[in-house]
Amino acid sequence: MAKYNKMSVLVLLLLTSIAFRLLIGNGILPLPNRPLDWFPLCRVFEFGLGVYIGKAFVHSNCFRFKFRYSLLNNFLATLAILSFPLFLVHIIFRFVITDLVNLGITIPLAIIIYIVLVLFLSWVITIIDQRIQSTKLFTKQKMLPNLQGGLINRLF
Image 1: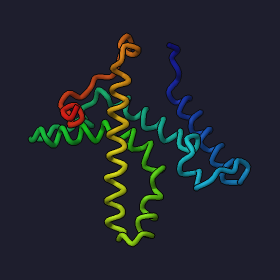
Image 2: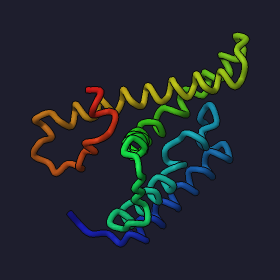
Image 3: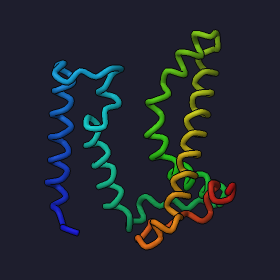
């Protein structure tokens, strides 16, 4: 695999993000439903920056938390596992809040229902992803270590 200069990749991602924000913001590339929020090429820089920061601190202790109670560690590990699927589904289901409010449900209850819905969908996506990665097709590749103590692994 070729080595790339990390900063040049980040600059390229930033320029891509800016270009698509300008194209969409000026109406040159018309997309429905607030595309600056959900269109992937508008958010590619933030994603790349997150990956860069995550890889930069992967061997550092500054982002590793050790709590006294293992249940809290397991909960935080599970939230970390769910974070990417949650990122994928949260924007798609924003309409649920307004639809529930239009049906007469209070705003706080609609938000709680929304949070439960997107967490459940993220959990389902994570289970499907783990099953796909455990098939023979993917066993020859080097896979990321699975968090053995997470709540997801105990449920299935």
